[in-house]
Length: 124
Image (cartoon, rainbow, N blue to C red; front, side, top):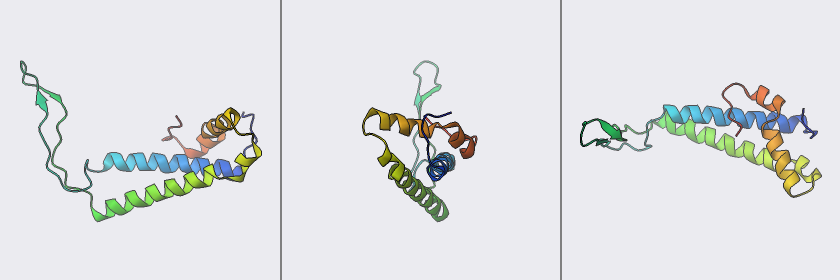
């Protein structure tokens, strides 16, 4: 249990922010490596074994218009929720300084917030 009495609307907004971040990470992992179509490049080969030892990328077809829209909408949602959480009136009830930072960290990892956010959430 937390030592802070977070309001329900603040905890709901933080949980939604966690979910939006998880959805954004999943989307970004599914997208091509470049927004615009770009040629790839070969990885470096080990001089003795001829095995690829570093990077290299295949050609990128770029994002489709739907992918551009989905990424922009999710990023806008993350910004909106970030503002909602960070400017919530609850924070004005706390003393500025390390205690406020501790409270913010406690909200991010609050068991009810994490549970409401779901399994794909990374709180650190």
